[in-house]
Image 1 (cartoon, rainbow, N blue to C red):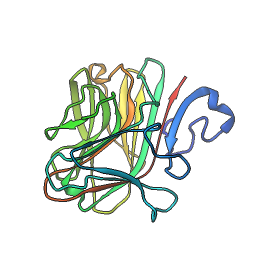
Image 2: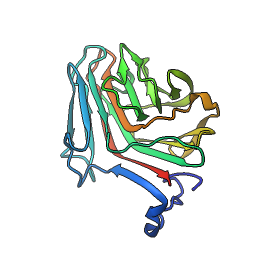
Image 3: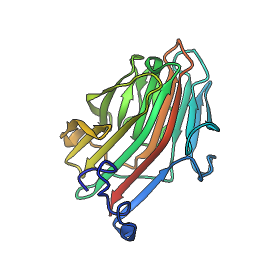
Length: 227
């Protein structure tokens, strides 16, 4: 259980007989219907959500569908609520890429409280979240955590155009949060004052920085919490 997905040691995935150890949710966008019963989708004036018919093994497209700054897609899964608690570990992982273009995206991928405007006025405006974020329109993702608006940021990764990247987050109770890029740890936050203690849902934002119609391709996401 040192890493989620990277080494295949997570109970319930490596050993299907141990699902009682974890609350698990996820989507590979192959068999699960994409509709309002599963997700809360909001667009900021513009933005669309659709399965990619050409995507291998299931891909969801979040299309900002605009070149006007701050317009685009806000997607959450309300049914999957994960609350950081002492002694319980949360694992989140997603594989995605950006096209047209990666460096003009207002970006969010991770866990957030329910909020239809996770990124507003080119800033992460939700007060409780744990995620990779970018609001500087340059493709540089920060590792970010915020509890009741008390937040901190750290190293993340720099995206590349039309290139898949796997982003992972491990929330170690109320002690620390480790962020992973393609299986390698890139940052650790160890300030309890920045670890939220409210329900957090898997969340994604793809909004344009104002010059390009950026599109986020999501291959899958998965999230689990020890019981």
